Image (cartoon, rainbow, N blue to C red):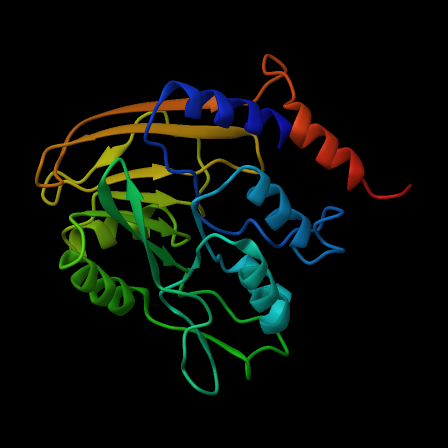
Length: 250
C-alpha cells in the first residue's frame, strides 16, 4: 500500500486529470487488520489516498449488510454496485453509479458485482445479486443522457467483460477486478470501441491508463502502463506511518 501511494502521488503531480479507481473485492480479506476491522482499515487507507470510486465485489459480500453499509457510509467517496440489492426490498445496497467531474468533463462510473456469485450462507435473506446484463443496460442508458464518458468497474471476469462490451454499447472503459491477470495493453472491442483492462492483484501491480477523448467523448488514443510495485519504489511516509499504527499485535 505504501509503494502504491508513492506511484499514485507521483502520477497526480505529473498529470492534471486523474481518476483513482478500484474494481472491487478490496474490503474483504483474511489478512489482519483488514479481517478484524471488516474492511474499515482498508477504507481509511483509501481515504488517505483520495480514491474517486470503488466497486463492491462478490468477496465483499462476506462482510454482511451491516458492515458493508458502515463502510459505504464511512468512505466519503462513491462505493458502487448497480446490481447488489437487499433481498427483502429489492433496493440497491449501494449507489449504482457516480458522476465525477474531471478536467471539466462529466464521467459516469458504474459498479458491477459478479452476478454468478453465491451469497454467503446465512446472508441469503439479506442480499441478492441481480442480473449484471440488465443493470448495465439500464444505467448505461441512463448515463448516456448525463455524460458522454462512461467507465465500468467490474468484478465479472475478463471473458464476461468482453461479452458485456459487445452487449452494451457506449462504454469507454471497463476496469475488471476479478481475473487479475497482468495486462500490459488494453483489449479493445473493435465494434463498440470499449477498452478493457484488468486491475491489480493484492497490491502486486498498478495499472495506469491514459485516455484522450475528442469533444464528443470518443477515445481517440490511449496509453497503457503496468507498474509492478517492487522494491524499486520507496514507501510513501504517510501510508507507511498509517500501516505501522494499524499493524496487528503479535
